[in-house]
Image (cartoon, rainbow, N blue to C red):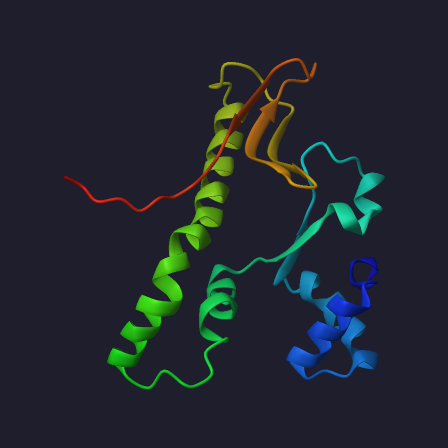
Length: 164
């Protein structure tokens, strides 16, 4: 897989998964077929450019597994009691949960925009709806007209705040 040409990434995956480097490629190729990992490209990336692994991002597709690997698997011990789970939530999950949940909100917003676009309920027909990034610049959700003269963008962020 071209996205694992970087030896640091490849070796890191091998060490953390306890899979021999000689067998790792075979396992990594199966993950997208199983629907566990998906590759995302910036909106408007041509099919030809999708061959460039540096432009795409691999991400865990299943939200439960994503939560598990982000917050639970990194715990050095089991979580045997409710009070231990509450402690893990307070210190390891809660401070980062809104950032974590923003991906799910972004997916919901994109689905909403795609449906409204299909139904003709947006101010213009968007030829592309998705995320775009380049180096350090990122637009979370955006739409582009077929003529590429009009662009609408939005950020899907969740913030915690107290109600008065």
